[in-house]
Image 1: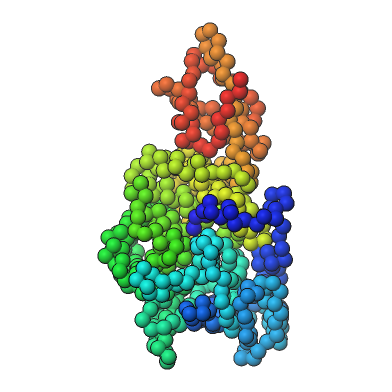
Image 2 (image 1 turned 180 degrees about the vertical axis):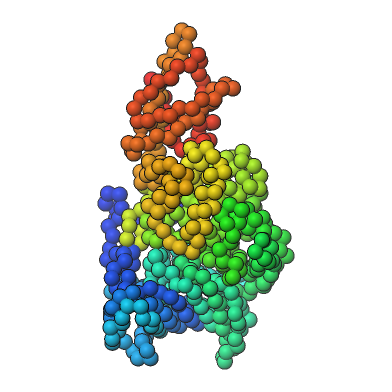
Length: 537
Ligand SMILES: [Zn+2]
């Protein structure tokens, strides 16, 4: 999801130096201590009853896991304001201690490496209500324009443990998951994956059982409840015919049928660039939500009011669907590397414009994003603290511009597009770090671009191309150099003057070139790469 400028107002005020002071809660949730690395989550079986009138949920989560070593103490996460009534292991209640958002569970026996076991956590409470979803997330309790109950969740920054107990760290996704939601009859509950059944229960209730058959990020797990109508469509590619399901408010069916036709175009484009949609077994779905959007895996939250942008597409459909490849399939292992989700997804928007229109339009699209770059802090955040305090949206816009700059530096579109596709396919359903991304690109592109990634990801400011023009009677001498934080920054620069083109290969020391006359076109340079251009007099 996109970070809004609104978020800037909500940042912690207590800031010393570059980052706020991190608390014990941050480290408990963000770091991989031995009470977390000792087990690997295999399966979550989450069941909740949703009580609209009290803005309350109650239920349980059974965690099936494999012991990675011998242990008897394990950490699960659930925020303090949610109540735990009991935790069971092999049918017996076990002891646990709550420290901030962590639940330290002591098992009655030591588990041995490679054994598989289960614990069940029974819990209830009023989960945090979202103040400004999806950015400032939590649960959303609303009524739709027809007065029907409309509930949704968004917890990307907040973390899944704001409403359900889990190992709330991005590095450990369950291999599959079941989400059961109990609600009053007459409404529908939509979650991730595939609806296996809906079961009538006593008391005028109904339970919807949703199954996810792929690994899933915790923050993607979602609950949507409303007066939904279902639109079933199909999409055919080389591997067969697949399900596209749209859950929209009953009154919006006709509008949605027309507007969501562009999903097929998006799917064709992204399968072309990034390989096959990663979750076909579970299908692709859009779920109408009472907020702008969110990349919930195989159940994308859609709330853009069926509107296209001036480039002729619905930004929420394209952006959030891009996340199915970058964020949901290929995922970062720590929140400090959030750019891996957002930079590639934002870049997918420009590629969508290139694919459906042309490369010139794609550059025009990128131009609209460039003024949004703020350079307030490095894109890569602090590690191990579940960081969510970015002061700007540079991981999106500077991120997409970094990729655009790299493409123009590579000067080989065939290799560039092969690399991007292989990147998405190599890390399909896997998590990775910034270092692995950089290693992958260097290897596939056959050249070391670490200096480029480091300059844009680890430094706040833009590099600056300084130049001096010394005009003499019959020639013009130009001196140029990079001023960059990374000493090895050697971005080549293409320039245009009149109908001529030239290329510089500046380094951080001054170089000189002589021309008969030169009056270069700065917009041409700005369209190719991300840097400041500064004339020295
Ligand atoms: Zn996003």
